[in-house]
Amino acid sequence: MHITTLIPAYKTKYLQELLAGLMTQTRKPDRIVISDDSPGGEFTQQLLSPRYANWVATLPLELHVGRRAGAYENFKNLVRLWAGRSELFHILLDDDVIFPDFYAQHLQTHQMAELSCSISARWNANERGQPIEGMPVPEAIASSNSRIMSMGPKAMFSSTVPGSVNWLGEFSNCVIRARCAELLEQPVFGGVSYAGLWDLGFFLAASLQAPIGYIQDRLGYFRAGGEGHSAQRNGPHMKAAYLGYVALAVGGCRIGQVTPEQMRMCATGMAGALVKNYADQPDVMAFVPLLLELGQGSEGAEAAFVEAWHGFLQSHGF
Image 1 (spheres, rainbow, N blue to C red):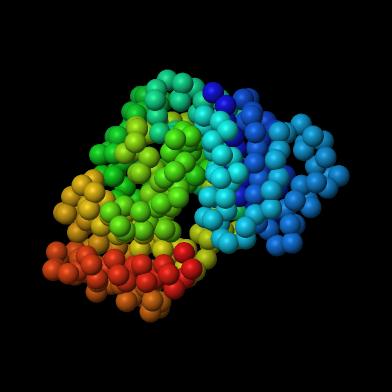
Image 2 (image 1 turned 180 degrees about the vertical axis):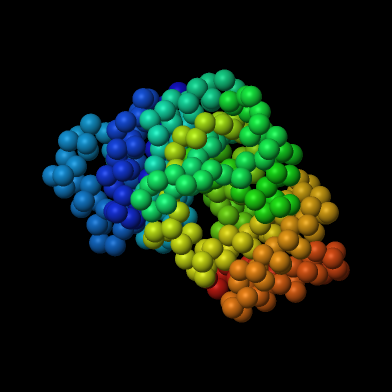
């Protein structure tokens, strides 16, 4: 099997760590495609500078100018540039780091079974790259003696959506089978967009095609804080990440993967989370009465939420 790494490039701050993570792989990717979305092509300029000349010469790099239409559009642009040229692909964000056995273990996992994608556990790290905590992995999984577990849609939806918990991570700790690339183009369940939670939504959608291979070993880290969306609590992306759980619940219910009770649980819990975290944000607080109505199963509440949610996405350019 061949693996292609897709890098949606924007930040140059962690370029050295990014390259080191690729250089030290015990099983290196067969191709690395970079779509540079940085202002003025700053990422490409630094990458091609004398400082990194020896590294660049040994990596199978392919450089392209990004479309500069937002992060997720850059993801989709990379998939189009890749164009199915390998059995597997990996979207690696420019501020995340993968450990030396990342590709070797993911490849081994895909060789064991017909999977839609493989997801490895990872650390959360601070701005300096020091691991500070793991993920909220369900006890039944964390305590299992199996290093690799196969997970279908029932386990995937029930362990994430009702309680609004993403214990799986992001695209950076996932290697995807080629046939699942089409799922990135339409982040929708039952007519409900899950923009803002693209990664978790994709994992759930992929599980509908074939099982997910979950690797218990922590094979990298997600860098919290810094310049990423996760550090901008009042930014539209973080707000959408909260509200996106309810979108997944409503959409999941429409396609029969989330029960009405689970949908109501998600809506009620998220209403409380918004009051706790966004009491000073009118655009978010406007959703609270809608979620409480949805949590009570009130007639018309689902349609009202979907209309408001899609309006929110449109107003913020998602």
